[in-house]
Length: 216
Ligand code: DX5
Ligand code: ZN
Image (cartoon, rainbow, N blue to C red; front, side, top):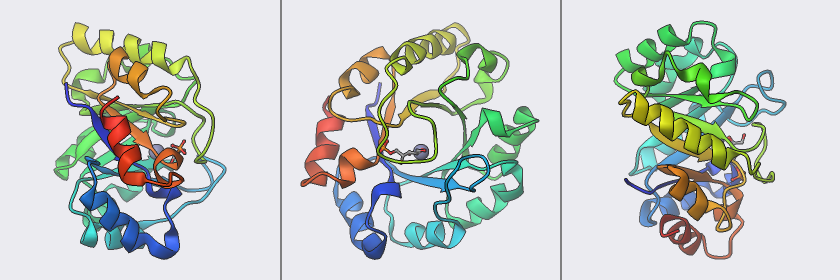
């Protein structure tokens, strides 16, 4: 299975965003992870469509857009136009998740669902075969730099079992507090893609940090 790394630009230097996107272009990163927060679903506001559009003009890799917003259907078309390749919505933010997933796919994007730390894997039983990816939050969403919740590793295994049992082709992504101390265990448990914000951007050598995660 591929070992993918998707650095989160939430921890980038917003005054030097072009430099940081160029760094990711040159690095071993597979995707660019963009965190969109509305101040309602999560207690923080990050950045919106104009920033995503600007990043898409410079990025040479797929844009992996993580929507932490209520009622995300309202913005599916806008994020497609802004350059999103993968669109992740939260299970907890969708009343009609099946419809939302079909809607994302109708725009030619990969469709993913994220679960908060308290949300159980079995809630995906009736949707897992429709998904391109599941994002397991390993912190409560809203902020970079939080501590990894260790129970996530067990959730990765449970999700892997569900994916195998249903013949789903969904990838498993983990987001929050990922660093060199937990990356290996997450990949071994079945994760396909690790998101990392502060571990990459607060590092003295972001290239090396990305390489370390990829080779965990
Ligand atoms: C948190 C975001 C994450 C965040 C991860 O709500 O979804 O993508 O940027 O940051 P770190 O890796 O610092 O926990
Ligand atoms: Zn994220």
